[in-house]
Image (cartoon, helix red, strand yellow):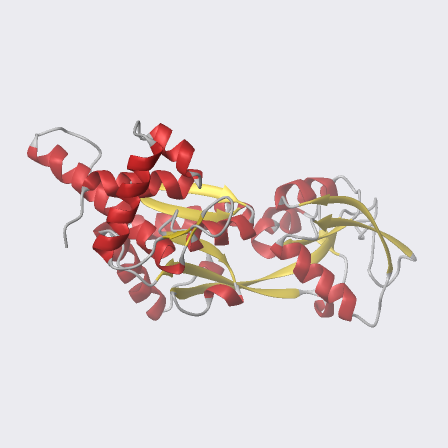
Length: 305
């Protein structure tokens, strides 16, 4: 197979910009020449990479997988050339993570700390984004790993998954002068709720629970946000009930500034899972996955952190 480095760089530019004209301009080449180079790459690998039927253009299924390969090939070549030239640098290709906002602030640091003892995470980059956007980042090959929740679309090829533990989303409330919850799912006639954005992963989970419940408290929304930490701040201020994951409220439940606003029937179980594409990653990422898999097989989990 004859692949030119410039073709890979062209492809990555087009995958990012999703527009032939803008990608050609970025690569400082005419659009016709740019198009021919993309076609040459597709002919070299033996399948179409670009879905030209949509506007803006997208990647085919093979193109999304190849994006990871192209990205790794370019980085490995740059790293190898730096070593040959004797350029001192941080070494080792960074491991790219995408993670839900709340996980990136709480459990991802614990994961990286655990793995640091095995010398497998010398460098990392983290994109902390909405869960649905994180899923898109993995599907588009923009990251090595996604730290998220139980997502059906990622539990099947071309993805691999590694369960890292379990947690619960539970309704919590600030407390009154007596230390009792300001709001209760069973006692309050009219309940102010701090909701996740309805299109977010957690928002869908909470709305599903409320839709199925036979208790059906009289709820009215006082805020919507995709940010767990913002909803927690508002809950602590006494603005309403929020469904928050256990890992985000450890200190607040311990010091009594938040208390459960309902029983176990109001809790939502969440699996914490690490995902990747089923395609060979760069050596550092492969080592990370291998070591972490062994640790999980030996009983380690994020739930205990």
